[in-house]
Amino acid sequence: DLKPIVAIDGPAGSGKSTVARAVARKLGLFYIDTGAMYRALALKARQEAVDPNDAPAVIALARHTRIDLSYDPREGTLRVDLDGRDVSQDIRRPEITEHVSVIAKIKEVREIMVGLQRSLAEGRRAILEGRDIGTVVFPDAYKKFFLDAACEERVRRRYLEMKEKNIPVEQQGVQNDIETRDRIDSTRACAPLRRTPDAVYIDTTRMTIDEVVAAVIAEINR
Ligand code: C5P
Image 1 (tube, rainbow, N blue to C red):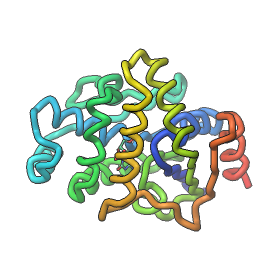
Image 2: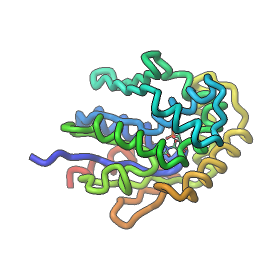
Image 3: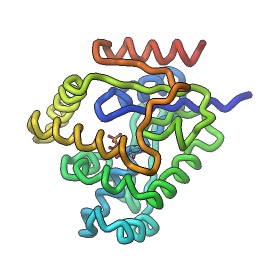
Image 4: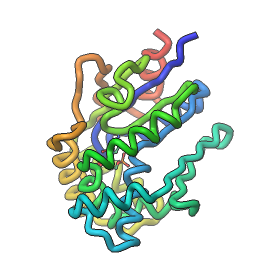
């Protein structure tokens, strides 16, 4: 029996989380949101007043931080714990999002997170979602996807999502955030976001969530 790992990468707002969650539920896969881990560390840095640009301090912090993801397959919900405290909501705040990409550039931080991600997936049929899943975390993944969408569409989606969650944001702020993060995430030296030929590319700009989910499942079952 093979142990199918499904990898989904793509820029912010491309629909990765929504699609990965839905596919996980339909196929009974374990869901791992790797961005949540970087977000949890960014939250801790903020709580401890550690400057995200101070790499040695962030690395030291990362070594003394416990991050746990618990996925409930029945409910389809994901809880993120930081040092034993539920931070699932806090990590989505705009001021955390603003600094997460700076922290995610740090090689030693990535090594810690990648280790966590691999051990979480160990022995499981899992779908992982992030920026470097198919390239670094699981280069031998059973199936790899790269989800993309036009920038305006990704801004629109993220803006609506934040409004739905009652997080106060402005359209311009969301656009700035997405542009800045995309730039940092795809130009960093360590594990940059990259579309590779072995990943199935899906431009979701004009697709509904259900259509993307169906396309991903069809490809997995092929
Ligand atoms: O997916 P999400 O938008 O929550 O990710 C937040 C940030 O975490 C990304 O902008 C990126 O800087 C970082 N990240 C990463 N590698 C991953 C997942 C997320 O560098 N695999």
